Length: 530
Image (cartoon, rainbow, N blue to C red; front, side):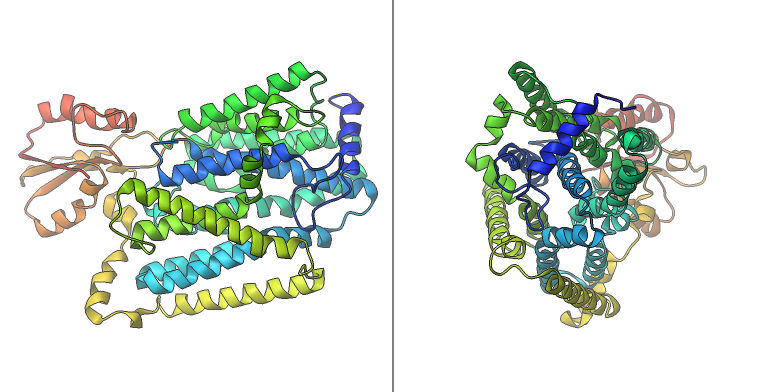
């Protein structure tokens, strides 16, 4: 017994079967009478542009990071559609599936990793080069989400200086596609009438875990695949006929406009201070779901908008643009490797331009030749080339890792200064006790942070992360003073907080002024902020 009428699933299969001209190694359908949808490429543009804008200027688009969630829904829809087609035709092959994934993912990714390695060898200090090498290994092995989960949070300051932190989303996708093709194949063979129910159960369980986890373990919920599966599975359910397509033009337009409104609202109303993904990931995913649904069996207003050539082109280069933009931004912020001395606005414009140029060149001369055209290698050659490139990059990363980041590039004096980078920021800042930065947890200082001494003068260190980083040094240098600490990221030690500051700043800082300082014998208050 099906959850919805059998015609919905049959129509989905029919549409997948009609899309016979499938991209060689791509996860989208190539132009054909019924297959290729320009509006989905346009939706990719809607996904990648907020991500780039968020990384350039978070205040401009505070929720731009939700573009990754849109990508997950798109990927789940397109990949499931292709898998259904192959399974229904009896042509399903794990080897062929992964050959397509290699063509789609590896060429541009490996080039970005190699370029990032070279830039790191030029600009990074030894400790930074070791960290970069570890992240390269994680990215090559598609486990970078686990690597960064064990490090800093996506929205924390330390993560901003990591040029490959954005590869976490690629790892989530690859981990999802380890089990999803087998799941669909076995489900189709042994319990086809219940397969849609099984897909919905997987999505529901993952969503429930995400909703609970975003409050209990927010960093793991952001990075790990178990709490992201539902986003990819949502697109998969749509591809399998989980909902009948709108039958009339009115409902197609209504679904498309509603989807666009949900995405726009998410981009501008969600921010990094709110617990994410959890329930807040539902609006952007639902928006992508509705837009794909609205154009599945006919045109809609939103579909025509997304089919405009500029948006379609940005969608075509979206993968390469996503790969290149963050290393460029990261190295420019940390080392000004492109230029220096420009105004902030001009710097951002140049970085955007360079990112687009890199994305276009990568798409044209790296992605395309490996996926189509006369230079397209055979599957056997492709595997050999991919394996050779992986071994090369892993070898280079291992050399940098085990040589402690090429310290011979620097003088003894420079190395002495650089060693100060090798400290435990969590311990030094007393993170999640006396300093707060992660969303999804209550910003309430531990008793140890505000415990008075009866034998020493009591100085309160109050402010943002710039205040937090001084506590260990002050305590070590002035050992006859008891330094208390009340610090939170982005929170100025002021009575009134600006709109750009977190709403949690009031919860963290206000009680210090309203209660603590009025009733505790504090000798000095040190106000420190950016």
